[in-house]
Image (cartoon, rainbow, N blue to C red; front, top):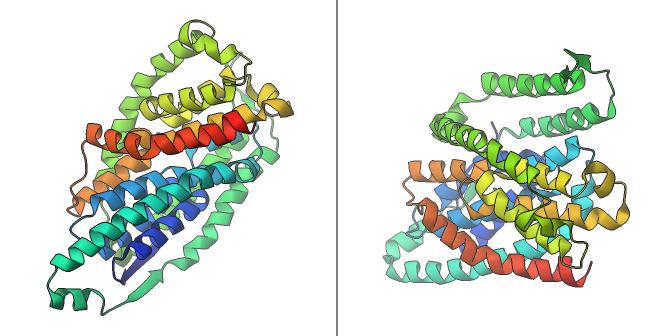
Length: 362
C-alpha cells in the first residue's frame, strides 16, 4: 500500500534514478514488491514520452531481477538458499560486486540510449508542450508507515531459521516443520491485514487490478507443473551426458555452473533451478562448510537471479511489469522479441562478469 505519485519531467536522469532506487529496494521489498510499487510512477512520469518500452525493459532487467540479489527477501532462489542453510547476510557480502559489475554498465547504456531518444522527442515536440512538461515538478509518497513492516518480515524470516521446534511427524515418510508453517501463516496474516486496511484511494489511483496477478499465477502454475518432471530428469541425469561437465573440478567449473544455472533459470523458473544446482554442487555440506567451494554458490546465485531476466517466465515480476505496462498503453515486445532484446543487452555483461569473477579472479 505504498504509493509514489507526482509530476516530473521524464528526463534520462530521472528515469535512471527511479530504476536505481528500485534496484536497491528489490533486496528489501522483494523484486515483486519493488516492481509493483515503482512501475506505476515510472509510467506516469513517462506518460508524455513516445518511446517507453525500452525504459520498461531496463526496469525489468534491473528491478525485477538483478537488484534482488542482496538478500533472501529479494528473490525466490536466494530464499531457497536461505532455507537450505545459507546465512541471511551471505548474499549482501558476496553478491554486491557481481551486481555492480552488471548493473552499472546496464544503467549507463540505458542512460545513453534514453538521452538520445529524449533529445529527438524534444525536437519533434511543440514548444508549448515542452514548456508544460517541465513546468510542474513534484513528488509525493504516501503509505510510508508500511515500510515498518519490512523489518518485521525480515525478523520473522530470520527467526524461522534460528528458532528450532521439533518437526510434526505425520507418518514414517512425511513430516511437517512447525516453525515453517508458523512463518508462512504470519506472513499471510500481514499480507491480509495490509490489503484489508490499506488505502483504497491509493489502489484506485494506481488503477490496481488483480488481473495481472491472476494471469501470472496461472502461467507460473503451468510452468511449475510442467517443469517438475524436467527438473527431476535433469537431477537424475546430472552425472551423465552434458551435465557430467558439472563434476569436473577444472578452472572453468564455476563459469559452467553460472551459465547452466542461468540458462535453465530462464526457461524453467529460477527457484527450482537454484535448488537443483545447489544439490548438484554438493548441497549444504559442500557449498557452505567448505570455503574453497563457495565460488560455486556465488555462481549458482548469480546465474539464477541475473539470468531470470532473459525471458518473461524467468521470474514472475517480469510478467507482472509487462501486464501493468500494457494496461497503461505501452506496447511491449512479444515473448520472442523480449528474449532477443534481453540476450543482446545482457549477454555481453554476463560474459564480462564471467571473465572477472569466475575465470580470472577465483
